[in-house]
Image (spheres, rainbow, N blue to C red):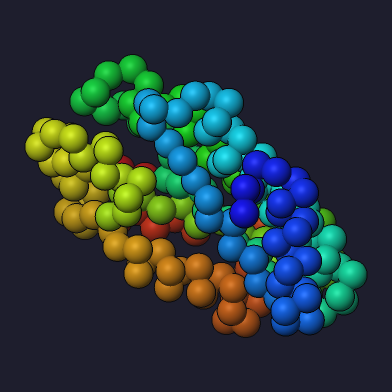
Length: 190
């Protein structure tokens, strides 16, 4: 699914309804970043894609009348800026802007969904061992900076993010909405 295409997102949601009868949980996880992408590409995937995912999931969940959960992937860059050893822009101005926008979208969709028992929350991962991080680990200096910047002294794992997403999607988070959960090994607390 091309998350930058509103029609593709609508089609994906309809495919879930056709296969399973309803949509209970949606995770908006598409994301790109780095110097190889333009401002427009990053904003389209990281911000517009999340908007379409939230909008059409919320419409479907309201129509169903059974509540639901939407989990958006933001980033620790969505709540703070960062300077890096690679100079101005660090991991990219568009990336930072798009991840700040995800938190704003999460809050607004969370408020709109709350009367319908639809919870909308965001995860804000720190430096996590994923393919998105691989291009940034281009030097020993930068990798060391990432690890030493986290008070826990390590990178996070994809499993740690998956477990946090599962929590936000579960009934254990039944009174949690319109907010974000930071999973960054303490990076943003410094």
